[in-house]
Amino acid sequence: MSPAELIPLSAYDRCPVQQIVTGTMPHTESHRTARIGWLRAVVLGANDGIVSTASLVVGVAAAGAETRNILISGAAGLVAGAMSMAAGEYVSVSSQADTERADLARERRELAEEPDSELRELTAIYVERGVEPELARRVAEQLTAHDALGAHARDELGISEVHTARPLQAALASAATFAVGAAMPLLVTLLAPRAYTIPAVSAAALISLAALGALAAQAGKAHVGRSVFRVTFWGGLALAVTAVVGKIFGVAL
Image (cartoon, rainbow, N blue to C red; front, side, top):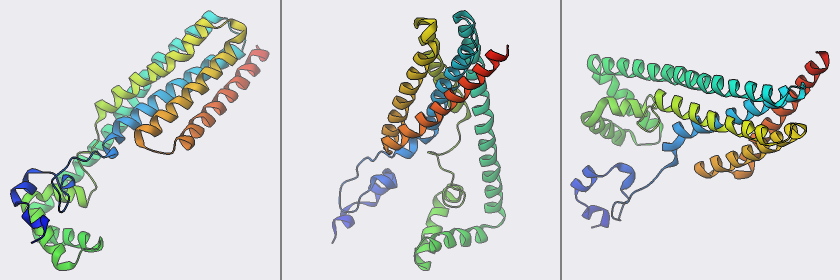
């Protein structure tokens, strides 16, 4: 008898599938996909806060404005940007959640009206993934008996608890991190002499973006260098273009 056969069925019933390893005692696994929802919102909010506000400050400074006017413009950009991020994230993720609910409602109705057809559909999904037809049929039957809607949501629609849309979480995370990111260029503007506003804000923004890229890569266990290059390149491009536009308008005025 193999070690796996010695594990009572009740142990499998109590433990999530990902915590069961054949021939060993159940153990806990931590998967980084659970971070996708909030990590995306946090990185997007902080990145946008740094880039948009720093670019705004650099553009207004390049136009020849005084420090007071630069700060007013930056503060307005911070408030408007944070609210825009919150609203945008909430609306977009809510739309995703609405679509998920509509798909689940349709699946629930089909399970009630055409259970045999839905069972064949689930079986075909497992066969397509490489499971033998007879075993696929048995798996589909057992999962249907346990939680038919959950099985179809996960394996047919790709909806799971880990990846489900959370509008409020995304909105709050984006708005808060935008405000934190946007506060940095305003603080630098306040502390740096007016003559050094543009280089000081630009340098601080690029350093902050590099740090953000590195932290995001570490959180998701991605390639640090690629992440850092990506955010600093586009941030630097935004700063340069805005500075040129501000300079042009400053000369024109």
